[in-house]
Every structure is written in C-alpha cells, then in structure tokens.
Picture 1: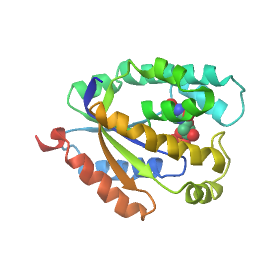
Picture 2 (picture 1 turned 90 degrees about the horizontal axis):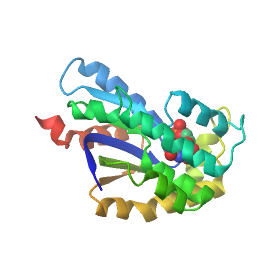
Picture 3 (picture 1 turned 120 degrees about the vertical axis):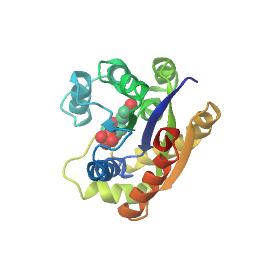
Amino acid sequence: MLIIQNFAVLEGGDGSGTTTQIGFLRERCAARGQKSPHIHLTFEPTGGPVGTMIRAVLRGETGLLPETCARLFAADRNEHLYAKGGVAERSGRGELVVSDRYVLSSLVYQGLDCGEDLPWALNRAFPGPELLLFFDLDPAEAMERIRSRPGRDRYERLDFQIRVRERYLALLPEFERSGVRVVRIDAARPPGEIADEVWSALGTLPIMNQ
Ligand code: TMP
C-alpha cells in the first residue's frame, strides 16, 4: 500500500473518544503557536458538500441505500484527500495532518452494512496513513457515553458497535502488514492521559523531529 508520510489518523468505534482527542490536540496546537511543523486537524465525514449529505443520512434525515452511502463516504474521502488544501497537498508540503477517521472506518462500518467487497473496491486506491491510532473501548462503555449525549446516529447501537470493534480488531493486522504503523490506545483511561499518549505517539513521527 502506498503510504502518505506526515499523515496520522484516529480510528475507533463510536463513543471511543477520537473527536474529544482532536479537541485536545486543537488546544495543544494553539498553545504551541507558530512552531514548525504546522499541524492540520481534520475529520471524516468532512464539512464539504458530500460530507454534509452523509451527516444528514447518519442523523436519519435522508434515507439512502447502504451501497449509496459507501460510495458517498469514498467520494467525500477523495475530496478530503485530493482537493485544493486537502490532505495530500498539506502533508506533501511538510504539514502534519491528523484526521478523525479515514479508510478503515469505511472498511469496518460499510463492510458491516453492505458486505466487504464494495468498500474494498471503493477504497483500495487510497493511500494509507503513516500512523494509525486505534481507540479501543468496550462497546458497552462506549454506549454509556453515547447515551449521555443529545441525539443518536444510525450506527450508535450496542449490537452494531460490538461488531464494529470485532471488525477493527480483525482488520488492523492487515493494515500493519501493508506498512501502516498502528498504535492501540486504551480508550477507557481519563481523556487527559490519552491526550498525552496521543501527543507522544505523534512526537515519534519523523516530521516532528526535523
Ligand atoms: P463521527 O461520530 O466520528 O463523527 O463519525 C460519524 C459516523 O460515520 C460514525 O458512526 C462512523 C461513520 N463512518 C462510516 O460509517 N464510514 C466512514 O468512512 C466514516 C469516515 C465514518
């Protein structure tokens, strides 16, 4: 698999805290000021036109076939990666890009929704990240966190989240074999501790040590 250097992703089931950690990173980056490298924080589904459509589907406002959703996630990713100011351009010019979710989310979630073949076909051409941080959390605990939030997305059900964790654990070794460095984060720990661990993991990337 082709790897994009200077690109790290956070992956995990719903409620595992990846978005919270992007928030911690944002604070850390603000405190760091103009230091090099610039760290660009981003997420999927994106805030672009395709990502916005996906969010409406996730909230249950629009009904689309699972196969259509799989294609939308891939289309959104293509924009995220290759549009002007996207992941490829930024990482290529020496920024560190950190994304909340990427290809593995599609292989896991859409793999469960519409079978493995279509998500693989739609995503196999995307390059891998240099580093993948997997947020591992007991799905029952994740559901407790989700229940304390307003609203509920389409995938936020215990039975589905149990299968999501199983799929992540099954697919991670394949990613490792294809050259992606994988770090498992115990997502049950206090968010501040996790933030330190995320920061140290990012600190091991060559771009952070130039
Ligand atoms: P979020 O909760 O991290 O904002 O992600 C939104 C939901 O979208 C989450 O349930 C995971 C799901 N998702 C997919 O199903 N496939 C994908 O490719 C991505 C990026 C997210």
